[in-house]
Image 1 (tube, rainbow, N blue to C red):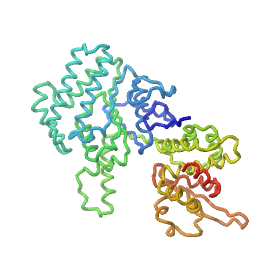
Image 2 (cartoon, helix red, strand yellow):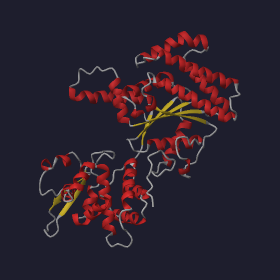
Image 3 (cartoon, rainbow, N blue to C red):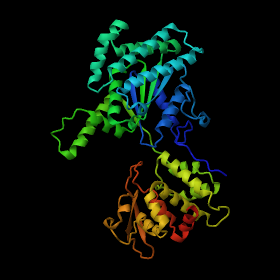
Length: 463
């Protein structure tokens, strides 16, 4: 039976319990004072794009860029269908443009046109007003593209003012580029939407994947040109990366700071700049139960049961709480599960525990797995380090390939008045949920209490 590989593409099937957050964010979008910019923060792999796609679907029913067959029916689509137009912008695709805001304007015009044609139910737009607005919208992006071939953040405002004097007042009869854009968007929204509340919602994804200068130029463009009435921006990003990108591009008067404090000072200024643009940044929470998320993705029913049993009553996190990494782990587990005989084997629990540990090390710490695969006795060393029973040695005696990793919990021995059974105390190190140097599986290895004789037969099967 072929193994199904889980895709990392965005999905409408929410398995991270974010539907309540999506509904709340949609309500904020439709009731906030405009113009408005909301930020959605999440580390890489946290499911930002799926969240944004689900939010867009909830607003107007758009399923572009996502598999609609994966729809979670708890999420109602097109709730605000006649009150909102959404535009999707992948920022990183346009990061090499001299003026990313021009690419954004072009994308707004393009998606406006497609949406208006769909509403008009014809091959071409029949409204003279909308045709005129969209043509003028195209003109303004062309003119800005010419003016901005060598655009830098300092010249954005000057470019806008120059363009207004030379083109806008004479050709379009309005006071500024921003005012024209506002009138253009209002005209299109008024033509096709009903009710008092009308919104143009522009969703910008992957700002944190852009180069620092490109991310800064796009934010500058939003600030100068796109503070529009009835317009709401949703910006998906890793906040810290964007803050550092802004800091790297701001004028630097930091001579009063020592070298070790300059970066911190720069980031504080970058944070303040971002706060001026984004009125509110919501932080996506990691999965509350990474084990449940994994078992939902595991296909072998015997393995699924054993993993649930192995985790029962164990409240210490031992999997990376990152949806993308859990999917990758599930793919490895599913691939290897077919090489093992399960059935009513009394060793099924040991095999399940062994498979999870092997798959984890293989997926996230390949250099350790290579050592293990080449020398099966390596497991004893790895297990001793993971459970901090390294023969009484301190951390300075650990090999370099282990010293570069961190443990989510510290295990220390203590005397409880009896020497019959060694006692240990486990203390959380409060790890960063998205840290890539964290050896998350260590508490599970301690709990599983496997020997080389238990786990290495499974290692031989997957070689």
